[in-house]
Every structure is written in structure tokens, then in C-alpha cells.
Image (cartoon, rainbow, N blue to C red; front, top):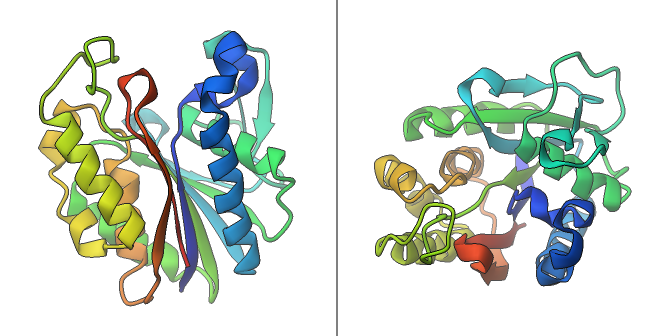
Amino acid sequence: MLVAAAVCPCPPLLVPDIAAGAAPELDAARDACSDALGVLAAARPGLLLVVGPAAEAQSGTYPAGAHGSFRSFGEDLTVRLGEGPGQERQLPPSLCVAAWLLERAHWAASPVEGLAVDDRLAGDRCAAAGREAAARSERVAMLVMGDGSACRTLKAPGYLDARAEGFDREAARALGAADTEALTALDAALAREVKAAGRAPWQVLAGAAEGAGLEGRLLYEDAPYGVGYFVATWS
């Protein structure tokens, strides 16, 4: 059963070594992520499942101890997803950012495993994956990684799309209210068009939280670099 969740953005720029001189620009987001992880630890989960978007080739499960690196982003920095034997397959970027956040927080509250979700996965299949994940343990917590649209400004990675702000507004509202129905209803086609990488992981969370009676709180909402970043807790 899902007992708590934290939603965090997953840009590698959250890692100060990668952001370099721009690192202070995301200090507020990092602080909110730390607060969200504190809520997860307080829930005393038996399993922490980290969920994030990935390309199809990197989708699937990752055991405790799985490792990854930020070499493709110019930094020879390695991370590990909790303690365990791991495997040869490298973590996708979203789970690398999650692993960095957990290492930064000295996570020791429970075992950690990863689930990378194909960012094109249909909403009903995302919800089904969430329900299956929530049944893994009597006390499951989720760290859900994902960004909003990448089309908020002319200089955004996806250029300006007038629909992006509305998409982000509804996503932020649903995440802050733990509104599983609204998250499930997010339009997958629109999410792709505004380059919102969080859609699939958020819908996994919605499936996992069905019937759990969790309350949400939005800790952070902004669009630096023209990309929607949100931090929320469900408990």
C-alpha cells in the first residue's frame, strides 16, 4: 500500500557540479526536494520505489544498488540507488538525479528500487503499473521524478507553446491536491507536444495512490529555463 510520495523534478541541473555557476538558481528547488524526502522518511516505508521517465530502451526495473553516472552531461560523477548488488545496466538520467538526491539526504529509511517508465506509455498502463507497485509491500513510498512542459518561453528547450502554461498549471494543481483523477486524465498527446517528461511517472503515482486517502501539498512551483518544475508531497 502506498503510504507517502514525493514528487520532484529531474533535470541534471539539480546537481550543482553540473549546473556550475548557475547552481544557486535552483537552490530553492533543491531545498524543497530535501523537505519532500523528509516526509518520505517520516512515513517509515518498508520499500522506497523511485519512479522516473526514460526512453524505451532504458525502461524497466532497477534493483537496489543499481548505478549510473553524469558523464554524458560533462561530469565524471557516479551515483548508486541505495545499497545492494545492482546490475550492469546503467540508470537513466531521471533515476540518476533521484539517486543523487537520496545520497545527498543520506537515505537509510528503507531499501530502494527503481522503475523507469517509457515516457510514451499509455495512461491506463501507467496506472496499472502504479497499482502493481503499491502492492509490493505493506508500506510503500514513492519518489516520483518528472518535469512539466519544456515550452514555457521562447528560449525553452521546446520553444514557446501557448498550451504549455495551462498544462503545467493543471499538473501543479493536481500534484498539490493529490488529485489522482486529474493526473490520470492528463492528455498524453498534449504532454508529448509540450515535452512534459513527468506525465507517465505522475500517472504511475496516480494508480499507486488509488484508495490510499493521501493528502497533497505543493512545496515548489516555478519554470526556470522555460521548463515547469514542481515539488510536492503526498502523505
